[in-house]
Amino acid sequence: MSAEAYLEQVNALVARIESTQLPAIREAAQRMAESIAVGRAVHLFGSGHSVIPVLDIFPRYGSFVGFHPIMDPRLMWFNVVGPGGARELLWLERQEGYIAQVLLSYHLDPRDTMLIFSHGGLNAAPVEMALAAKEQGLTVVAVTSLANHRASAATHSSGKRLADVADIAIDNCVDPEDAAVQIEGRREKVAALSTVAAVTISMALVAEVARELAARDVSFPTFVSPNVPGVDPEHNKWVFQEYTAFIRQLGDPTG
Image (cartoon, rainbow, N blue to C red):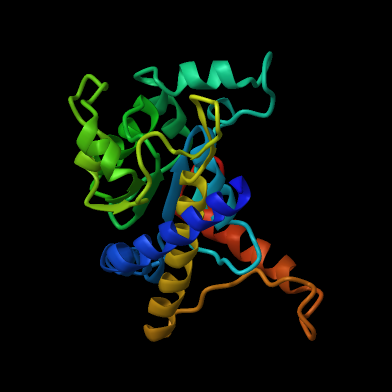
């Protein structure tokens, strides 16, 4: 019954997010829409497995120009051991000072919003991204475990955890342990919940930002699946062109 146990917890998790986090999601979406409406960006950041919602928000079918992923391959694993391995990543994301190097390739503006994903909310990478964004006047939105925030002391030298820095903290409603299913005869639980929570919240934000932009009569070039009947074969090529123009106007060296 382990599969059923996991799916039951997923259903309960989504229900908790819906019943408790919609006000924070709507507030965050309003700030994000304000950034996009004036031609600026919603920057996206996560390290480790928290890069998954960043990858899923943009570019993907059903999302749109205005979201700007900040991804560093050193903070993502693409191997288990050896070059690009998880051990190296886990060490680096805890080291203070690295995010300042990452941000040399990006230009942050006070009109921007920074959306940061981190289940634990303690590692140097998400905390320093939030601190840098706040220092430059951005609105900072965090998706994190507030249960872990309440249970854990800060490990960063600033004395801050991610939710301490954020203007808006969206609770992923997941326990600090993250793994959720107990297997008989085993001490360790399996099957984590935080990625389901993060992607659920991220897609809710995408939907709500789109609603806000439409209400303001702001255009948002959207990736559309080629499986949708009647889609212009050149549509997504146009979206890539719009994104290229968008990142150039942000003033990033990478653009």
